[in-house]
Image 1 (spheres, helix red, strand yellow):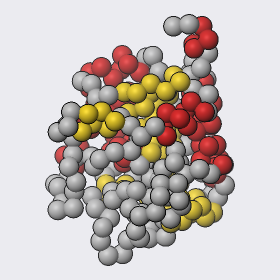
Image 2 (image 1 turned 180 degrees about the vertical axis):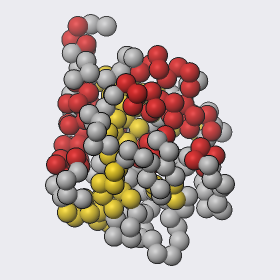
Image 3 (image 1 turned 60 degrees about the vertical axis):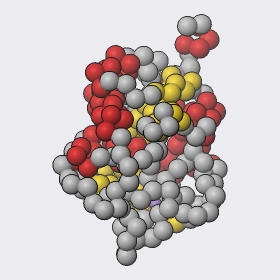
Length: 237
Ligand code: MN
């Protein structure tokens, strides 16, 4: 690898797989935000879980992107009627990837499916379907860069130190969310209906996960989240 490239952190980004159409895909905003923040993005297709450790040895950070539902098998529950299609191989790969990343102390940023995956990897569970009474609209009809509902960011959290404590308007494109929080993780933000919208590990160098999509929410605070993640990744170069 040329020396000029070595100086920039390499951030792996998980990608979606459409099993039926035999396609891998990722909305470009993820890699754009990582590049803008000064790192080089590397897209990670689903591989055999045993490859996770070897691959992570070359990375300086891991971004868990959005995507489909995680199979309830992986958190010890049975499927509810509202569960969407799942991809067991993708789940197994990404669970291995995040566990290997955490074992190495690598900076991890989770987005949407990413917060759910992180919570499961560490022993938590999910709400399988938010399309029921008592919940806000978490799958907004507005464009992706529009904020739709608010979240309350808790004081004395890493997230509050980056984005400020109190209310923040965010976008929302999910029908699942963390339920029981995994040991070691801390709630950093909730929406007004009580849905967990951010988790973090205060003991980890950089482990923050959000349920919204900062990569498309064109807001200075969202850029700051990517900048701080890449800054943490640069320490692993
Ligand atoms: Mn939401």
